[in-house]
Amino acid sequence: MRQFSQIEIQPFIDYLKFEKRYSTHTIRAYQDDLIQFFDFFEITYQSISLSEITHTYIRSWLVNLKEKKATARTINRKISTLKSWFKFQLRLGSIESSPMAKIIAPKIEKRLPVFIKETDTENLLEIINIRTEDWKSLNTKILISLFYSTGMRLAELIQLKENQIDFSKKQIKVLGKGNKERILPVSSEIIELLKDYEHLKRKEFAETDEVFLVRENGKKMYPKYAYNLVNKVLAVNVKTLDKKSPHVLRHTFATHLLNKGANLNAVKELLGHASLSSTQVYTHNTIEKLKEVYKKAHPKS
Image (cartoon, rainbow, N blue to C red; front, side, top):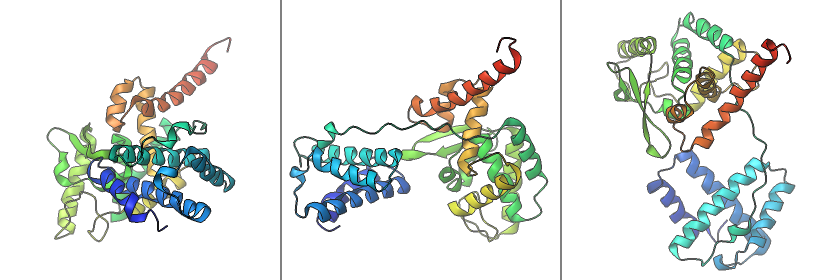
């Protein structure tokens, strides 16, 4: 991809980074989508100017993606990228109208979040509480405890700094997507766990980074390290799961709260969702539980 690389894409990437304050992961996804888009144009249509790009050209790329077995979810993400990019070009005055107005996104089947049943969660927490004979076991315990108790995202937990934990108020300040801050309440049990972890860390390592969670060498955790620890313990102890990622614990946090009658808006704030529609997906799991209760209890079910 040569024709559009620096001229068209970089200002948009800078906009996402400095104005929208998107995460590095999100920015990379946008950039990869745009590079793929313009690569296709260069190969298929050779020389073409920005103002000449119409919805017909874009549809040809989407058809190409479909032929390559891209899922509806993937195609929708790429459509979203192009909508944002063309909107940015409108803002700059580079084009008079967006060709995306005539692009219809394919329908996506709603996927219910995978979560752990309450009884399985209780068993899991009991198991990790007795397996702290080494630093990896301790990290496994604290990762799972924090993911389930707070609903934090993996990136948020990895970046968590010592000064974001308020032990006296029993709360954690989280820096979420778009650098938006939110305050998460935690139990006395979790606070004691965090205190013990911090004490052991300072005793074990002469110097550590500002980040709260560290590996067995005292260095900052990285996403794959945390993912593997959680994945391993879920694979061994929760056999019913199709997915075994840290995000499953975030889903479990939200589902259990709603199953216990928590307010949807409150759960939205705890998760750091920008809109209520993102949180509403968890109500489907709650409805499934209600159906299960109905079938077991109602004589006419």
